[in-house]
Amino acid sequence: MVSLSNLVKSYQNKKVEATKNRRQSENKLHSTLSLKRKSSSGLSSLEKKKDTALAKKEGISQLLTQYTAQRDSVQRLKAAAEDRLKHEEEEKDRITQEMEFSGSAEDKARISEKIKSIDAKIAELRSEIKQRNAAEERLAKQIEDVTKSKSKIDLQIRQQVHTKPMLLEQLKSSTKAEEILRSQVKSKLKQEEQAKRNLIKIAERLAILQARKRKAKRKRKSMKKSKTMKRLKTRVRK
Image (cartoon, rainbow, N blue to C red):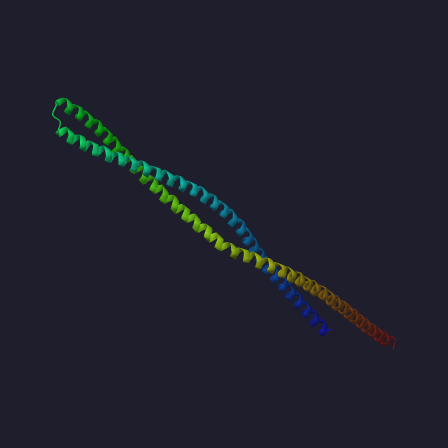
């Protein structure tokens, strides 16, 4: 009886230990599944970010090409205006010298009008060159800003390329670990169920023995009482 009680306690401990092991395996499985979901979600997010970054890069590259073409055009127009300005200034110097050697008032007046016309052209060309300089500076600033944005996006893409293999490895390892842990949980669950069945069986045996013991005790008590009553009756008759 004592040994059977100890056996029940032993089976209870085994059942507790089996439950503990099963829960530990389940916790590990939950952690692995969480890591797997994060890895999968991270890869999906990474692909979306990559697509967005590539689309932005394409747009920025087009903008950079546009600004560069505009700057090149402004530089060509400015160079042409500077050449015309140089020509007009040289023409003014030539005419001014010609005016010094002109004798008649009529010639002086004609040359003076021509100089005024040249001055107007020079002023117009200088204004144009000033505008071209401003446009060139503005475009240079835009090109600088766009180039910085492109470099920033290139860095993001490189970082994403570096991160992807790590996430893929995490997904691969967590998927493999999931298979192993699911098998472990299944095995631990079977062990726990077996421990429960064993505990129930041994507890039932103990209950039967205890019931028999109580029955035997009642029987002995009843027999003892019966013997006592017989002795009393015998004494009374005497």
